[in-house]
Image (cartoon, rainbow, N blue to C red; front, side):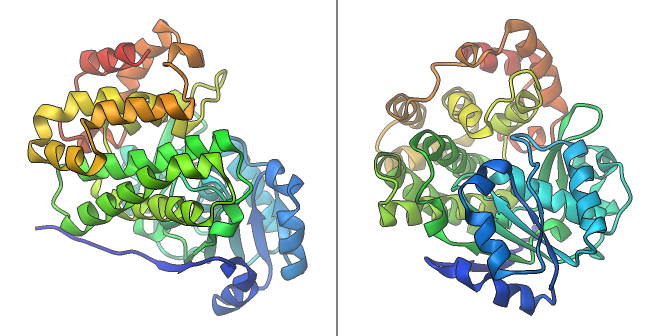
Length: 369
């Protein structure tokens, strides 16, 4: 028996961001907290939001990998501002932070108790404030995801999962990604592509998710190089946002070994590694590791991708200018040893089609170095 849910309200299209005040009104929100980061403030987008929504209160302290401390600081701003809802604007970090703050509007800290690996799913209820998620990158798909991935107070990067975590509205406007720099376009795009690949390979029964993942993969592979080369290519930007959206719509089916490894890698504070870049670097080796376990799915991927999937992704990484390996990103042998143990405790470990041992995780890391 399988439970299949799709998913939340999505408003998609060029220019849809201008309707933000109307969407807030739909939810009964008059004084939202704007959860974002300092870089997005510098673009002028947040000033535009404040002009559109005069009652908005801004928190712009989202770090590249959101921490429990940053969530607590944002929640303090929410409380002090007497806010009645949240708008998360930015990449996956800002959207995940917004979702974690939302949890604290109805649940006491600490956040670690709500992590999936700590049995937190059943502790989360729906008595929390409304949330509109506005992505400005095409990568994580957090705007339609059930998870907030946070570095908790104990230093672990954990997924807080619940159907109640889904944003009230996902407001997806490709125009907000037109100015994304080439390097970030590539890194976030590979994040989206990795979601499509991993969720398609995951073993649980969810045919709609697999169909959505394959369509997202088609969009992403066909658009990522065009979007990187020309940020104003409207069709490419639209397809990349579709890829990100569909990858996350589908990954309720489960992710896998790539994410089991990249979550603890992203928690290495001295490196502060980009999640999408890590996914790109690890994906070829995980594809090879999974090949024997996924049967005909490998052949399906090969037909759609135009070649052996591991080779296609490795070649794409090279053309996009991804790092040559983990060591080029500063990951040491000692770090790999620790990460191989941490991956066994990640919530994505159990949904890989081939369950890895600690030694096999270490081999994947070393072969990706």
